[in-house]
Length: 194
Image 1 (tube, one colour):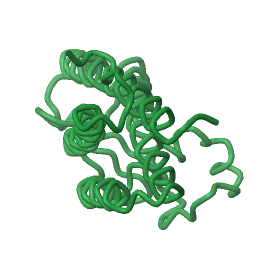
Image 2 (cartoon, helix red, strand yellow):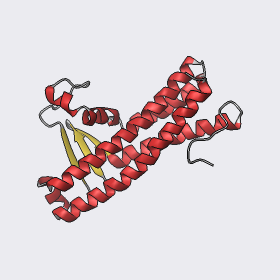
Image 3 (tube, helix red, strand yellow):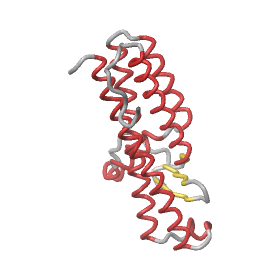
C-alpha cells in the first residue's frame, strides 16, 4: 500500500470516476423515465400497470446509478479510514461530516445498492440487512421529475441521492485541492480537474 497521500489521491480519482458515471446514469434514468411515460400514458397508469420493457430499463439504469453512488461512498470511507490510521484528525473529521451529511440526505442508499446487487440473497432470506416488509421488497415509482424507490416500504429519491453523492464527491475534490495547494498531497488533481 502507498503513502497516505497516494491512497487519498487514488480514492479521490476513483470517486470522480464514479461521479462521471453518476451523471451519465442520471441522464439515462431521465431518458428511461421519459420512455416509460411515452409508452405507458399518464403517470398513474405507469405506476399501476407497468410496461415490462420500460420497467426493466428503468430498474436497470437505477441499479447502475446506485453502483456509482456506492462507489463514491466507499472512496470517502477509504479516505476517512486512511486519515484515521495516519492520525489526520482534521481530515478524518471533515470526511466523517461529509459522510454524515450524505447519510442524512440519502439514508438508505447503501442498503438499496446492497439489495439490488444481492437480490438473490435477499430472495432466499440471506441478505445482509433485514427487510422491514419482506413481502414488498421493492417498488420503482417514476414521477414527472424524479424516480422514487420504495425498498421494503422505505422511500428513496433518486434526485436527492444524486445531489447528496455529488456533494460528497465535492468534499473529496476540495480535500484533494486543499492538500495539493498546501503541498501535502500529490501533484495531481482529481481526474477532470484543472
